[in-house]
Length: 299
Image 1 (cartoon, rainbow, N blue to C red):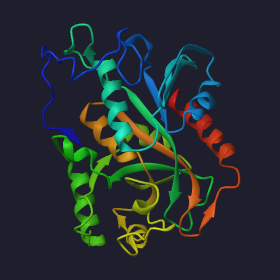
Image 2: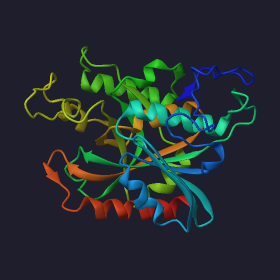
Image 3: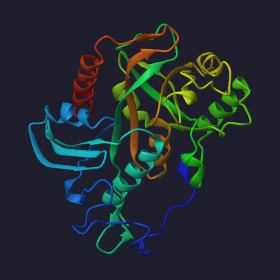
């Protein structure tokens, strides 16, 4: 996915459009540019930030504001920021735009820089498997994110040929219902995908706009689309199967790609939706994922 156009360097960003705190940090993340690592590991759960940073050789900065907790430190000589996003693509919209502002906007002059910095952003998430043979506690690396939310529709973008092929085939396969938002598709960074995929499942990830009805769950309310999960799990495209449900990847891939950052998602499977199973010890499985990602991303 590519941005059709970007704001020109020299354009002044008014205070209402790029909001800064009195100390010069970006509004939600409460970080300043010098506090941002070259590698950013994003997680949904605030508590998972410390599960990452405990592996750092040293922690240089800690901050917490609302659901956004950040620890920046060093691991194997790499400056890393571990950052919680909270749940959902609406929060990813905040996180990616503010990370990009830290990297690519002169915050004092309030204008985009001429020299652009590409961050590596890896999401360490949890998910539900959409295939019986993808077990709980295993890991899925997302080759593509299919957005079932609506965040990316507010941005001017164009798809790659690979993304367009996948989207068209998906819409035809599922006979996508008219009463749901039109999906969008964004791909992972190919080098990160290769780096993180060894001995893990690689597949297509569906990013839902909610946890219950949007993922086909029924507690008291009845979903409007009968058999949606079956339509998703039966989808296959150019050797990739529908692999999992989660709630952030599509917006991360879309926004990150449009802004020139390298993005990829690795998820620990905590539930198998077809077999109705849930992990007996997902914390241990998440810790294994963290160690694996740290080792592979800092070679």
